[in-house]
Length: 231
Image 1 (cartoon, one colour):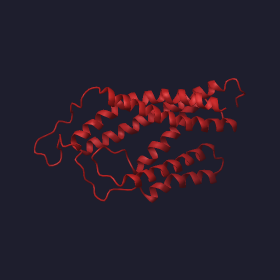
Image 2 (cartoon, rainbow, N blue to C red):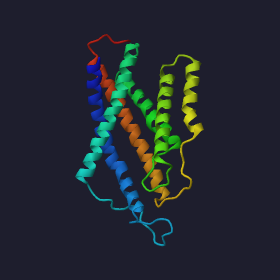
Image 3 (tube, rainbow, N blue to C red):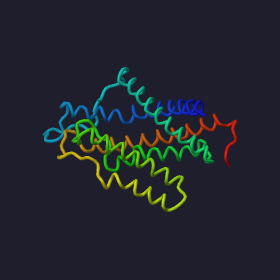
Image 4 (tube, rainbow, N blue to C red):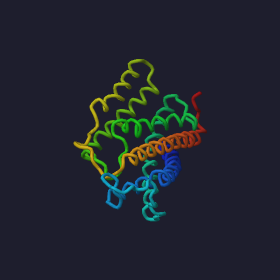
């Protein structure tokens, strides 16, 4: 069992991580590099008498920077894959079928728990924008992800209204409590860049998690093909 989990998660995480890294390099990183120009004072938006062009040259490929970005993304999604495949193994033991098509639903659930639910109150932030204390935000984020993951599991596998009601409470609780917010809103980065970054980060996250779920389901099914599968 452990060997099957390890093999499935390793292949699924590596493949999904490479795809996520490619999407981030193409869609997300240019927005980050553009925002850094405002953060460092190379560009000025607010209070500037001159008009700053929306399209900026943010440089080409940096092998060191981009290589480390790819490596980090692959490692992160491999870690996610171990959690997901481990959960798939538990679901399989309890009679639930797991394959590539059903894996897409698992990926959607992971996206909701890790990206969408936290972003509802604490959206992805660009460098240079106002933000609350990082430790407080990390604690809230981890709590929200945990509560949302349990809620998604209750929605998917719960069999009565008590489970589904508990899921609704868990989904709402972090946002009713409220995410840590800065005391004042300030920063040199244009809000248009912030909106573009948040949208692209969530879009790439959705694509990466759906891919991860599909690969995880595919490799898990292939690893367990010799064993009896539930209908």
